[in-house]
Length: 372
Ligand code: OSB
Ligand code: MG
Image (cartoon, rainbow, N blue to C red; front, top):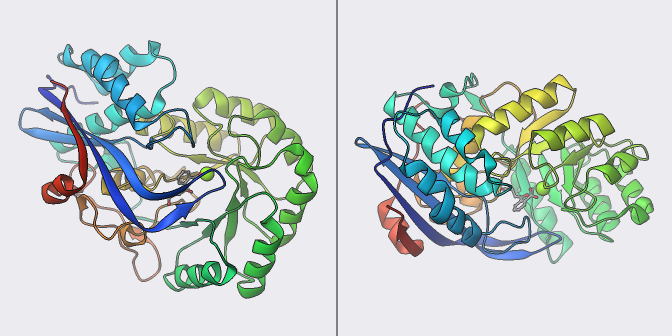
């Protein structure tokens, strides 16, 4: 890959953008998206990255504040000193830092965007992606009542989303799935429990087996791989791991144990686009299918997820939805919109193909810090 001469400056912004509707999972209800953005500059070009961490340690131990500390004290100082280096060189330098993959991904993403812009190619083609269109998918949060849920699904189905994912919670699986399947017997449907169940709940999980689901995402503990392998022996529906897969070695463990047939790869969770690509190749070689997840990203992070899905290894619809279902106003242009057939056309413009909207950035900014 192309070498970078020098990174001349690094700046962090944290924004809080109101969500169109609150998003509720088994672990938290959120009304705003808080995102940390990193801007890197080199010889007249700019690269942007977005951390997938959030304000609190609920999905993972990382938060925007831990990402900021890692950037300030370790990741950016390591970058500041470098001359004539590749992204691979830099990733090797920071390999001795344990964990903090969301912080590392933020820098990797900004570097990839920058390099792609310098050589006038999209991030997707820079990593060898071929697809010009990617499928869409929607993740629908827990709702206060069933009518609300049914209406939301009806709208998503009319918009032609390729598959619908429902957030699920222990004890609610039967009422939700019975109501949804009686209204929508044929939609491509899956559920995500975000670790709400234990093996003691086998009878509840077996209930989910009766509703023709594509997969059940992270039914057990957020950090578990082993118990999922025991569970997979008891249910027909493929299990999908999300938060418990932190890196390639976790996927190797899951493959050896037989912990599930699918992995939700969030590039921002596994250390960036390049690590996500390797992880996906490994999974496919072991017969594990992969798709790109989402973390309610702004237009910056969303664009990386779309570029990643140009790779052939990502052959299942992911959690990539239209901008308008998350935000009335976003900080990047243009917004993501679905085509007539529900798919998303991939930008072939340099980098991620999106431009930061300075006015919106100012409007939603809650923190600004020039790192150097
Ligand atoms: O578990 O996939 C998840 C959002 C925040 C945290 C965790 C998850 C999610 C989603 C939303 O499911 C995916 C999206 O639309 O970006
Ligand atoms: Mg999930």
